[in-house]
Amino acid sequence: VYICTLCDATRLEASQNLVFHSITRSHSENLQRYETWRANPYHESVDELRDRVKGVSAKPFIETLPSIDALHCDIGNAAEFYRIFQLEIGEVYKNSNATREERKKWQTILDKHLRKKMNLKPIMRMNGNFARKLMSKETVEAVCELVQCEERQEALKELMDLYLKMKPVWRSSCPAKECPELLCQYSYHSQRFAELLSTKFKYRYEGRITNYFHKTLAHVPEI
Image (cartoon, rainbow, N blue to C red; front, side, top):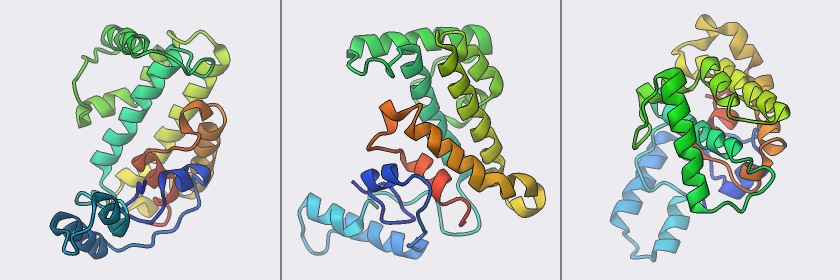
Protein backbone atom coordinates (compact mmCIF):
# COMPACT_ATOMS: atom_id res chain seq x y z
CA VAL A 1 0.00 0.00 0.00
CA TYR A 2 1.54 3.30 -1.13
CA ILE A 3 0.91 6.16 1.29
CA CYS A 4 2.71 9.22 -0.06
CA THR A 5 2.32 11.69 -2.92
CA LEU A 6 5.92 12.87 -2.62
CA CYS A 7 7.77 9.55 -2.79
CA ASP A 8 7.10 5.92 -3.69
CA ALA A 9 7.25 4.60 -0.12
CA THR A 10 4.82 1.88 0.88
CA ARG A 11 3.26 1.94 4.34
CA LEU A 12 5.62 -0.82 5.49
CA GLU A 13 8.72 0.91 4.09
CA ALA A 14 7.72 4.21 5.66
CA SER A 15 7.14 2.57 9.04
CA GLN A 16 10.50 0.81 8.98
CA ASN A 17 12.33 4.03 8.12
CA LEU A 18 10.34 6.91 9.56
CA VAL A 19 12.65 9.82 8.75
CA PHE A 20 14.93 9.21 5.78
CA HIS A 21 12.95 9.45 2.54
CA SER A 22 13.59 11.78 -0.39
CA ILE A 23 11.05 13.57 -2.53
CA THR A 24 11.01 11.77 -5.87
CA ARG A 25 7.85 13.14 -7.50
CA SER A 26 6.75 16.47 -8.91
CA HIS A 27 3.25 17.82 -8.44
CA SER A 28 2.63 17.66 -12.20
CA GLU A 29 3.56 13.97 -12.16
CA ASN A 30 1.04 13.38 -9.39
CA LEU A 31 -1.65 15.12 -11.42
CA GLN A 32 -0.83 12.87 -14.38
CA ARG A 33 -1.08 9.82 -12.14
CA TYR A 34 -4.39 11.10 -10.81
CA GLU A 35 -5.73 11.38 -14.37
CA THR A 36 -4.48 7.85 -15.07
CA TRP A 37 -6.35 6.63 -11.98
CA ARG A 38 -9.50 8.48 -13.01
CA ALA A 39 -9.52 7.43 -16.68
CA ASN A 40 -7.79 4.00 -16.50
CA PRO A 41 -6.60 4.29 -20.14
CA TYR A 42 -5.02 0.81 -20.15
CA HIS A 43 -8.17 -0.90 -18.82
CA GLU A 44 -6.30 -2.46 -15.91
CA SER A 45 -7.67 -4.12 -12.80
CA VAL A 46 -7.91 -2.08 -9.61
CA ASP A 47 -4.75 -3.68 -8.19
CA GLU A 48 -2.79 -3.12 -11.41
CA LEU A 49 -4.00 0.47 -11.63
CA ARG A 50 -3.16 1.16 -8.00
CA ASP A 51 0.37 -0.14 -8.55
CA ARG A 52 0.77 2.03 -11.66
CA VAL A 53 -0.21 5.27 -9.92
CA LYS A 54 1.54 4.25 -6.66
CA GLY A 55 -1.02 5.57 -4.24
CA VAL A 56 -2.26 8.65 -6.08
CA SER A 57 -5.99 7.99 -6.13
CA ALA A 58 -7.03 11.53 -5.19
CA LYS A 59 -5.65 14.93 -6.04
CA PRO A 60 -2.63 15.46 -3.76
CA PHE A 61 -2.91 17.94 -0.91
CA ILE A 62 0.80 18.57 -0.44
CA GLU A 63 2.64 20.02 -3.43
CA THR A 64 6.38 19.87 -4.04
CA LEU A 65 6.69 23.62 -3.66
CA PRO A 66 8.31 25.57 -0.77
CA SER A 67 5.06 25.17 1.16
CA ILE A 68 2.87 22.55 2.74
CA ASP A 69 -0.90 22.30 3.07
CA ALA A 70 -0.90 23.14 6.76
CA LEU A 71 -4.65 22.72 7.25
CA HIS A 72 -4.81 19.12 6.04
CA CYS A 73 -1.56 18.39 7.85
CA ASP A 74 -3.06 19.69 11.10
CA ILE A 75 -6.26 17.73 10.58
CA GLY A 76 -4.54 14.46 9.66
CA ASN A 77 -2.08 14.58 12.53
CA ALA A 78 -4.68 15.70 15.07
CA ALA A 79 -6.89 12.78 14.06
CA GLU A 80 -3.98 10.46 14.80
CA PHE A 81 -3.30 12.03 18.20
CA TYR A 82 -7.01 11.70 18.97
CA ARG A 83 -6.70 7.95 18.34
CA ILE A 84 -3.51 7.71 20.39
CA PHE A 85 -5.26 9.36 23.35
CA GLN A 86 -8.01 6.74 23.21
CA LEU A 87 -5.53 3.86 22.97
CA GLU A 88 -3.55 5.18 25.94
CA ILE A 89 -6.73 5.44 28.02
CA GLY A 90 -7.41 1.79 27.17
CA GLU A 91 -3.79 0.75 27.88
CA VAL A 92 -3.48 -0.96 24.50
CA TYR A 93 0.30 -1.04 24.98
CA LYS A 94 -0.40 -3.87 27.45
CA ASN A 95 -3.22 -5.59 25.60
CA SER A 96 -3.95 -4.98 21.93
CA ASN A 97 -6.91 -7.36 21.67
CA ALA A 98 -9.60 -4.88 22.63
CA THR A 99 -13.14 -5.28 21.32
CA ARG A 100 -14.94 -2.65 19.27
CA GLU A 101 -17.18 -1.96 22.26
CA GLU A 102 -14.17 -1.32 24.49
CA ARG A 103 -12.63 1.05 21.96
CA LYS A 104 -15.92 2.92 21.67
CA LYS A 105 -16.00 3.23 25.45
CA TRP A 106 -12.52 4.81 25.48
CA GLN A 107 -13.63 7.34 22.88
CA THR A 108 -16.69 8.23 24.97
CA ILE A 109 -14.52 8.69 28.07
CA LEU A 110 -12.12 10.92 26.14
CA ASP A 111 -14.91 12.99 24.57
CA LYS A 112 -16.60 13.62 27.92
CA HIS A 113 -13.32 14.62 29.54
CA LEU A 114 -12.30 16.95 26.70
CA ARG A 115 -15.71 18.59 26.83
CA LYS A 116 -15.45 19.11 30.57
CA LYS A 117 -11.82 20.24 30.72
CA MET A 118 -11.23 21.91 27.35
CA ASN A 119 -14.76 22.80 26.21
CA LEU A 120 -14.16 20.62 23.15
CA LYS A 121 -17.46 19.24 21.91
CA PRO A 122 -17.40 15.81 20.21
CA ILE A 123 -17.46 15.89 16.41
CA MET A 124 -18.26 13.33 13.74
CA ARG A 125 -15.25 14.20 11.60
CA MET A 126 -12.01 16.02 12.41
CA ASN A 127 -11.93 19.64 11.28
CA GLY A 128 -9.46 22.50 11.47
CA ASN A 129 -10.91 24.24 14.53
CA PHE A 130 -11.09 21.04 16.58
CA ALA A 131 -7.58 20.07 15.45
CA ARG A 132 -6.08 23.38 16.57
CA LYS A 133 -7.72 23.18 20.00
CA LEU A 134 -6.82 19.52 20.45
CA MET A 135 -3.13 19.97 19.71
CA SER A 136 -1.96 21.82 22.81
CA LYS A 137 -0.06 21.23 26.04
CA GLU A 138 -3.27 21.95 27.97
CA THR A 139 -5.08 19.16 26.15
CA VAL A 140 -2.39 16.56 26.73
CA GLU A 141 -2.28 17.54 30.42
CA ALA A 142 -6.03 16.93 30.59
CA VAL A 143 -5.74 13.60 28.77
CA CYS A 144 -3.00 12.47 31.15
CA GLU A 145 -5.53 12.68 33.98
CA LEU A 146 -7.13 9.62 32.36
CA VAL A 147 -3.84 7.74 31.95
CA GLN A 148 -2.80 5.72 34.99
CA CYS A 149 0.87 5.04 34.24
CA GLU A 150 3.24 7.95 34.88
CA GLU A 151 5.70 6.69 32.26
CA ARG A 152 2.94 6.74 29.63
CA GLN A 153 1.95 10.24 30.71
CA GLU A 154 5.51 11.46 30.15
CA ALA A 155 5.66 9.79 26.73
CA LEU A 156 2.43 11.49 25.68
CA LYS A 157 3.61 14.88 26.92
CA GLU A 158 6.93 14.55 25.11
CA LEU A 159 5.22 13.48 21.89
CA MET A 160 2.96 16.54 21.99
CA ASP A 161 5.83 18.85 22.94
CA LEU A 162 7.88 17.67 19.96
CA TYR A 163 4.90 18.04 17.65
CA LEU A 164 4.26 21.62 18.79
CA LYS A 165 7.92 22.45 18.13
CA MET A 166 7.74 21.02 14.61
CA LYS A 167 4.38 22.52 13.68
CA PRO A 168 5.50 26.18 13.19
CA VAL A 169 7.95 25.06 10.50
CA TRP A 170 5.27 23.77 8.14
CA ARG A 171 2.75 26.41 9.20
CA SER A 172 5.15 29.16 8.19
CA SER A 173 5.43 30.49 4.65
CA CYS A 174 9.11 31.27 5.26
CA PRO A 175 10.42 29.34 8.29
CA ALA A 176 14.02 30.49 7.72
CA LYS A 177 12.86 34.01 8.60
CA GLU A 178 9.90 33.38 10.90
CA CYS A 179 11.18 30.50 13.07
CA PRO A 180 14.87 29.88 12.18
CA GLU A 181 15.72 28.20 15.48
CA LEU A 182 12.88 25.68 15.20
CA LEU A 183 13.85 25.06 11.57
CA CYS A 184 17.41 24.23 12.64
CA GLN A 185 16.07 21.89 15.33
CA TYR A 186 13.52 20.21 13.06
CA SER A 187 15.62 17.18 12.13
CA TYR A 188 16.42 16.49 15.78
CA HIS A 189 12.77 16.88 16.82
CA SER A 190 11.50 14.70 13.97
CA GLN A 191 14.02 11.94 14.73
CA ARG A 192 13.10 11.96 18.42
CA PHE A 193 9.39 11.93 17.49
CA ALA A 194 10.03 8.94 15.22
CA GLU A 195 11.97 7.21 17.99
CA LEU A 196 9.01 7.57 20.35
CA LEU A 197 6.63 6.16 17.74
CA SER A 198 8.84 3.11 17.20
CA THR A 199 9.41 2.44 20.91
CA LYS A 200 6.80 3.80 23.33
CA PHE A 201 4.04 3.64 20.71
CA LYS A 202 5.24 0.56 18.89
CA TYR A 203 1.88 -1.12 19.49
CA ARG A 204 0.37 1.23 16.89
CA TYR A 205 3.25 1.99 14.53
CA GLU A 206 4.97 -1.34 14.02
CA GLY A 207 4.53 -1.99 10.31
CA ARG A 208 2.38 1.09 9.70
CA ILE A 209 2.48 4.89 9.65
CA THR A 210 -0.05 7.49 8.58
CA ASN A 211 0.28 9.61 5.45
CA TYR A 212 0.77 12.89 7.28
CA PHE A 213 3.05 11.58 10.03
CA HIS A 214 5.24 10.23 7.21
CA LYS A 215 5.23 13.55 5.37
CA THR A 216 5.90 15.71 8.43
CA LEU A 217 8.74 13.48 9.62
CA ALA A 218 10.37 12.60 6.30
CA HIS A 219 9.66 15.39 3.83
CA VAL A 220 9.16 18.74 5.59
CA PRO A 221 12.92 19.49 5.94
CA GLU A 222 13.43 18.85 2.23
CA ILE A 223 10.45 21.01 1.24
